[in-house]
Length: 273
Image (cartoon, rainbow, N blue to C red; front, top):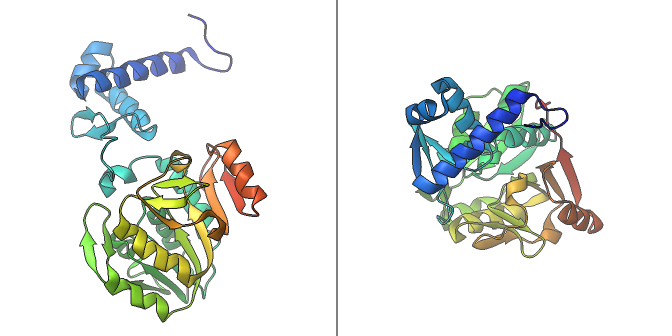
């Protein structure tokens, strides 16, 4: 076997094993850790690391004791599954977004898993005296609740367990009465046409209200959402002020956005700053 330049033999063997695991999951629908450990003559710890790496790439979903094939036909995977995908990219985007927040701001965040990464970094920063966060995300509200100097406001409406969010017209009126500096919004899809989109019209509806209330709109979307169109558009591309993403974003679309005057920040690999 020829080892690629710069790659250790162990890395190559692990990559081949992971490719074989991904193929087995696709063919069989599900696999078990113990069976894989026996098949490849490695420890269960090694297999779990393989499954974690493959899940990060979106090639499978880990379960208790094994993994299953992702259900790509389902329009909206559950929040806890989405949270486990692209964790590194979301953490880096979250850190970059939180760095743009200033004490005294009023910001709005949707219920996206990337929004949760932003909330985590805001809490970790600390030192707040007067920050107001408006959200429809139950996990985001829980993350920030009780943090010194942070006031959390939630929209009213119906709870959607799939997204751990609150949706419905009960939440629309809040945005008519408040001033918001920045809206940080994730998306299920992002294309030049039609813009930022989400899996359901209910989620899109509350995000439209968030976008319309904010002076500045910042899209927080990892590379897997680009060149994808979900069910309902909530923000046209020309209404976006800035985009925070990872360096896997497609070059052609990045050039297009910058030509439109939209600030695009590509966050490189490495520890979240």
